[in-house]
Image (tube, rainbow, N blue to C red):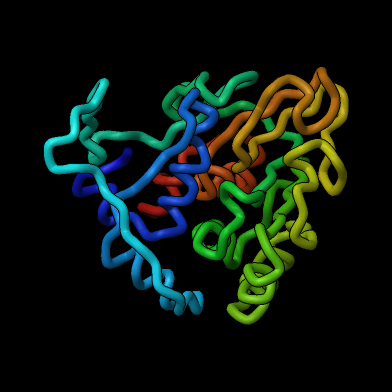
Length: 227
């Protein structure tokens, strides 16, 4: 269960990303408390039937509690070959990339694409790096077209694919070859997950991915965001 001031400030899509990754951390499921953000999301998506909000009892006992100061967290990157192999982005800055993949059910929502677009707009991706963007759903794809995000990505030199599991599961539209190094916004980087068993996959958020696409190597997005 995720709670606290920082968690309550997260938009619904970011909460989905956090709970999506719980299984990769060994949990059975992840939950956020139902609040006004939850209710607004349901209304925006046309949920009109009656529903019940469940929450933890006020006197609930927890097996273990963890507390972090979100203001002190650096952008994080998971190195090959486990999502738990996490380090601050500064420890892997400069790793050369053959491919950057932005998308999937984990980080292919409209908010994720907007984040990537804020760094890619008016710029060009590195010439030696393939950049593939795969919206999570057809609805997200259509919204990205309406907002001009797809045009931004294409102008930057990225390839935009239809919604699909695609490269994330090593199926198509971005499958990695031998020795390829990829930075991806997906949820798993096991050996051979996105293609060849000799490829390497680093996991990161859309801001890190977009900054890295421009640099052709793993980069800290804060340098661009503060420029």
